[in-house]
Length: 462
Ligand SMILES: *[C@@H]1O[C@H](CO)[C@@H](O)[C@H](O)[C@H]1NC(C)=O
Ligand SMILES: *[C@@H]1O[C@H](CO)[C@@H](O)[C@H](O)[C@H]1NC(C)=O
Ligand SMILES: *[C@@H]1O[C@H](CO)[C@@H](O)[C@H](O)[C@H]1NC(C)=O
Ligand SMILES: *[C@@H]1O[C@H](CO)[C@@H](O)[C@H](O)[C@H]1NC(C)=O
Ligand SMILES: [Zn+2]
Image 1 (cartoon, rainbow, N blue to C red):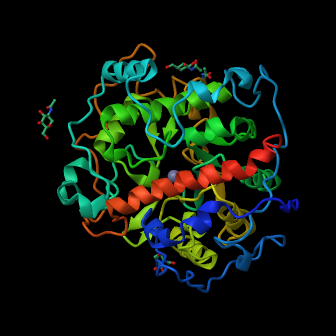
Image 2: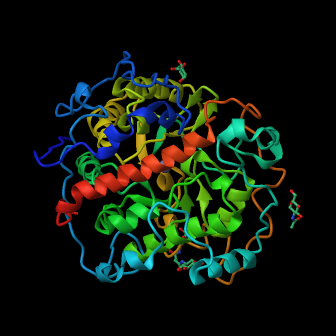
């Protein structure tokens, strides 16, 4: 349970932190959270919170800010040879040879992949052959609910972003009360090893929703996540708002992420999380046609969404204390609902990992009543092998689309769906201007590019 950080003096603040100082308020628009946005240029407010315990070696909260020097990424602790056989999963393929997984064979990082490549054309054909009907729903325009009043008001498309609509097939909770389906999104990143070290010491396993662009950037980290028996899920190639894309672009985002994860680990995830939770019935159907189940996070009311807001600390719009106050409220809400829960957290930034390892996870382990903390696939009472197509138990957990290409004829947007949200919400917390979203996307890739540049000298470690 003790985190050790090795001092490393050379690392500096990523350029994006200083360069994007004026984007703070706009960065906040990235996700709905219960935190109050800071006025541009002013530090986010410190708020009070109470946790049952914290990690004795936690980085002090006062040091977890957008401006703190980057602490050292830990190195990969275990490397695995090509051809090594995972023993924890029956029917798992041997590990691929990473020397054959070359970035040049994948799309450009952090951009929606082109749809005219032979690979994407094949996946488009596979979706057409799946037997699953993709509803004819118009794409949204960038800018969320305010920019799309008609779509936001159209409950038939069940757009989660505007009102929290879910379908029966969406995974938004764990079935058992006080069971937490742990998830970390947007990695792998240079800070993921710090999280992995903590999880190993605490004997915990998580679900990593992996961005394809990060996976091809840090393939050995992805292998380490996989071999440490964490669940890998798809979080798209370039982290777009999926409802703004064409069907073909959505297929490209899913297809390349599935492929890069399989090329690196040998297995293909069966679950995905939509970036920003931006999913509607069109995205759901395409996902299903590509054997991906939708996993969002728990939302019990417009103001009680299980989002720690941790992503916004790196951008300077949320204070670490606000994240912990959000966590305290999530815990309070978790005891009031009859099911378990799923929370939004990230492993992309140093700050998010420090909050997880120093505060949130130690507090969760000391929580009274006790929590059961598991990867999503486990909290759903499924075999761990069902996390991947290659190891899925096809008799107990039939995939939506079988290898022969015939999907179950029904699709997820039947009338059996439930609109669990409060209906269309044109000015909800997820509202954002189109300018905001563009700048956030640039910021995200700026972050990552900056991080890559900074750790380039450490590539031997990664
Ligand atoms: C899809 O809907 C649009 C109008 O929203 C319509 O113009 C188009 O013909 C429809 N396509 C199909 C295949 O039904
Ligand atoms: C649930 O969360 C909401 C908003 O985050 C908060 O106002 C409320 O106090 C929480 N409920 C409990 C019982 O903690
Ligand atoms: C699938 O699960 C069933 C029931 O647990 C088991 O009997 C069977 O052997 C499993 N099949 C495979 C291929 O693992
Ligand atoms: C289940 O079916 C998929 C193809 O649809 C196949 O790749 C996989 O190997 C099968 N699982 C097992 C355990 O045979
Ligand atoms: Zn994300």
